[in-house]
Amino acid sequence: MAVVGAGPAGASAALALGGRGLRVGIIEKAVPPRYKTCGGGVLRRALALLPVDVRAAVERECFAAELVHHGPDLRFVCRRDRPIVSMVMRDRFDHLVTEAAVRAGAQLFAGTTVLDVMPGGDDVRLVTSAGEIRARFVVAADGANSVVARKTGRPEIRDVFPALECEVSFAAEKMAPFLENARFDFGLVPAGYGWVFPKRDHLSIGVGTTRRGAANLPQAYARYLAALGLGPPLREERHGYLIPCRPREGMFGARRVLFAGDAAGLADPVTAEGITAGILSGQLAAQAILDGDFAEAAVKRAYREALEERLLGELRIARRLAWVLYECPRLRAALLTRHGRGMSELMTRIVSGESTYRAAVRRPGNYFKLFRRAA
Ligand SMILES: Cc1cc2nc3c(=O)[nH]c(=O)nc-3n(C[C@H](O)[C@H](O)[C@H](O)COP(=O)(O)OP(=O)(O)OC[C@H]3O[C@@H](n4cnc5c(N)ncnc54)[C@H](O)[C@@H]3O)c2cc1C
Image (cartoon, rainbow, N blue to C red; front, side, top):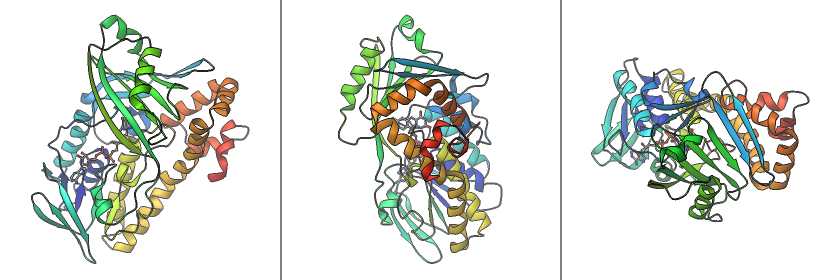
């Protein structure tokens, strides 16, 4: 068994395959712990899936989520007595899950890049920077620019969310008002949003948009800092990357390869959050391989059914909601003006794992039923 990529999807797949006497290799081009461009906001619904104690990676816990809307100016704060978002730096978080997979028996090939992929009837040949590896199944968890997808002829993911993530510090008194809440701002970034995530000694501030090529993210970021009342930072590190927000077409078509996480395009189109789907899809891929007993058709069927049941239906509803949120600013403003408190509470319930998009659209009388048609 080979897992390509040691992010949340790959590490979770390898962990779920552990302890069963199988030979599992994790092939990772970086040497962990490695920086990953990410806000590092791990939602409660993601943490609930992980059978690993990752508290050592948590820098701050946010018990409140703050939604700020600009034009009209609105602000909603939702609180819980358990953390809604746990803030991590991804190098430490991903490394903890990978270490757990290694303890469960996986072998980590760090600093090893997959260069080519040749699926066959009985196994898959992976050409790597350290030689050839053969595996009965491959879990492709190699992220948004998946080499496995390219080499197996899968089409590019159509909807991506380009995002700019900045690790910034300011004088303590400037950062103080931002240290408690996970903050999300709408109405400043064209067809997207901005966020402020507090870390132990700095802030992760980012902007992202659903419009590839149309929004100038560095400009949007500068406007966002000004709107937050923050001048030039004392220290700043900028990283840009893409978040794939539409399931990859043809992802079930590659022989003996199961795509998971960003490689499969499973991030939530509303929040562009992909850690939950990464963990879940990695686990479902592993379970499908075990349930299907390595028989190709049975494994594929099990994975497709499990993904449909647990994720794809959710993502279809989320996509409709995202369309209103990002493509219909006047409707968004009207809905938030009338129902902002209720909608913020409902989103908080969804990201906390207390509810789902499907449950929300099925509730009689709920405004989320507007997005029901795709359920
Ligand atoms: C700016 C930004 C902010 C974000 N903020 C959040 C957030 O706050 N919360 C959230 O939930 N999500 C967030 N996301 C999304 C989240 O980062 C991803 O959805 C998540 O990392 C997907 O996990 P993954 O395991 O599928 O892929 P990744 O985490 O990308 O892991 C893929 C791994 O594969 C390795 N790899 C790639 N190619 C090869 C190869 N050829 N050979 C071997 N190894 C390879 C990479 O080195 C990497 O370690 C953000 C994304 C961006 C860009």
